[in-house]
Length: 153
Figure 1 (cartoon, one colour):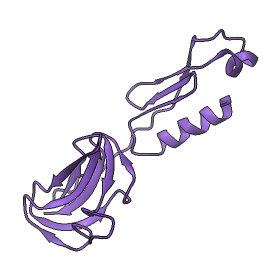
Figure 2 (figure 1 turned 60 degrees about the vertical axis):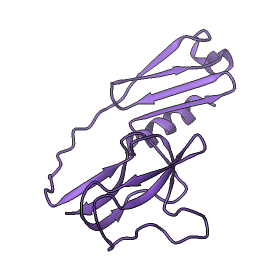
Figure 3 (figure 1 turned 90 degrees about the vertical axis):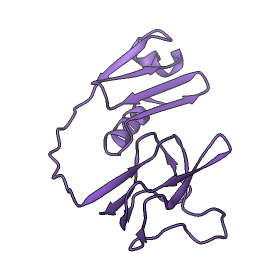
């Protein structure tokens, strides 16, 4: 992996809802986090040779953090992922989705499954309302506290 590929990863994380990203490829380890202004990259000598940095030295790259103003919608509620895992809209590949956009739900209704370490964790609604938006595609990885559903109260 070269420095241009690392820069592309940084841009992808900056433009997504992901707060933190870690990747290991052989003896290359990259950790990107939006929480701070520093992005740490630990790379082997062959990747950093042309930068005259020795192996296992942390290279720090400053990122620009944008401050975004957000209008708070008191009529909607966002369901967040309580764990890191894989998002599934249905209990089985051939089964119907638990919910779809436009469905009216009650508190306690199962909305999806997040699989973590071969355990299927049912994610339930904590409010009554109507599904406005499903924010994750079926089978995609999700992070802790990543928004999954937007519900109109």
